[in-house]
Length: 275
Image (cartoon, rainbow, N blue to C red):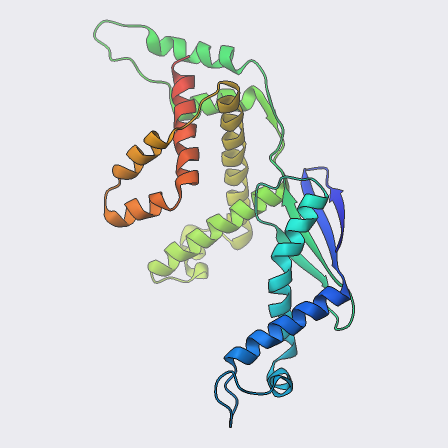
């Protein structure tokens, strides 16, 4: 397997992966044999039909898809290792060439964690949290809002988010919206018409939100790293045990890594509020 790497200006990484024809042929043989085991052709018991007959019965396009599906994970991981990169998201795959008897080529778009440069964020945050610590007779102290702290962090940090990360988050938000719209018994067009928006406008809106949310996530992660803010197993278990019901508890338990990130973010925000 051969791979080539190109790093775009925004931080997106493009891997071009060439799968040798002999590896494609070997994998094709393996996939066909798997189909033979499951085949139920007329006149033959399941898994007993001759391989040549099973092969003729298979749709060529579907067979290529099955072969690629088997080759993608291992060749992508090999390309990542070859080029010594550390992706933070699943790749976006664009197939370039899938011809029988020839090398197969695909491109994989991904990205590493962006570099975050922190400035005088502590001094900036201290200025806005100072007022919340002044005791005024007859008045309850007003805690600094999340939005106010976020603004100071954005003003005192530099980070460039690769477009591929933003696009993936936009796709997730759109999928989430579509699921919610379906639950309401509406089509996407009906929902957009009722809110006075169009697809392009909604995507642009989500892109802006995605960039803001992702920037904040990486800035908080950098602060947590510098301040050595971590999360132990006990904190994760406590969060899981606070679930409202058993289903929620199971969901949290199966996503401990994600839960740890959320807890770490909250601890970092608490650290900032107490500066």
